[in-house]
Length: 273
Image 1 (tube, one colour):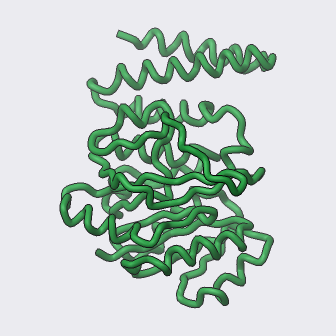
Image 2 (cartoon, one colour; image 1 turned 30 degrees about the vertical axis):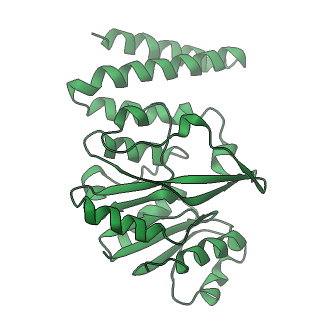
Image 3 (tube, one colour; image 1 turned 90 degrees about the horizontal axis):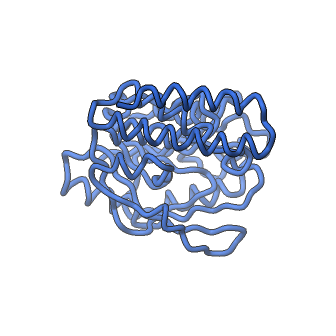
């Protein structure tokens, strides 16, 4: 199995070194490691001196989706492993993916469980982020249960469902996994093989309020292309999320958004059979 590792980064020089150390410590070695510097202003460009075996690509700041898509385009391997620059892999992660796909050659994407560390302290992962394998579209609807750093995906599957949506500032992973899960099985390696670090104020999930504002965009996209068996479920989820957004808009006196969300809910309710 040939694997390209894609690491998007932005002003993460110190933790990027931790991420790269975890890649090169793998018991099964990747064929190439691509770091996409998304317009950093810190010392990130020096990373090639620390890790001369990587492929370092620089682009003007365009967002994490653009950086990952550039990595996918430049990757020479058929299998793509994503790693966020502030996360790290456990040593057997790639080997576990290899073993899984040898046993399940028909599956073109797999992911693992994870550990969380927040502000330097290990925390329990909330129950809502419980992992599932197989036909997991229903489990993926409410929120994103798959961390990009936990995944391995075949390039053919990405070409089939499309790249990361560069118009989404956040929830771009939720959007892509929905497009994968609606028609494809996703394999679960039920082991904690990555560590996710959190607490930094500039993390995208912290910077942006109301993540459902972005999830509804992804849901509306899959609604347009969904089969009859999934249509009602997606529609129900969309209405639920717009109601939550409406409650938030009313609470914080966002008058213009109140009207938008009310109109969205009315229109979607008319589509219910």
